[in-house]
Amino acid sequence: MTIYVDNYQRPGRCGEREVFWSHVIADTDAELVEFGMRAGLEPMCDQAGCTVKIAHFDVIEAIRQELLGTDTAQYIAYAQFGEMAKQRAAGGRRAAKYNPVLQRHSWTKLREHHYRCDFCEILYVNTHDTGRRDWWRVWRWPDGREGTTQGLVPFPKCPGPSQQTTGQKVAASA
Image (cartoon, rainbow, N blue to C red; front, side, top):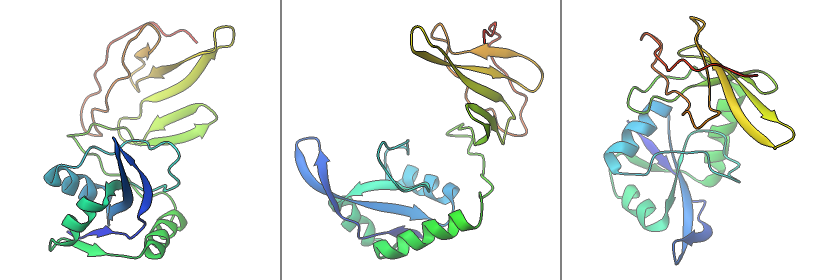
């Protein structure tokens, strides 16, 4: 497994400190997640304002230097990182691999506010009450069960492609 560390070095803050941020990526999302778990990096999340559209970790300079001192990390220029991102985007949507540890859905947008998970085939719709400006999700499992995040019910985790979907039945209001 090879991971790639770029030289982006964008200035920013980490707590009280001024630091420089760079990107860590891998050939596949599964390799990236596996490496991140072994290295103790924080789980990936949606990063507000981040323009990188492929799975990656943002790391500070001290961690970047530490990673570059290992045999598994390979240095790439930020321009190469951008090219890797463009190649992935140009090749269309890569087939996602299910990670049972993270239990994340892989969403395909069907139309505005309508999505389907490629693994468990759960459907969800973002809906809202225009009077209260309150958004929530309404979902339907392939077997017809429904649910909603209205009333503080959590959105179900992805059980994976080969497992039986289980979820709490809650009356959907759409």
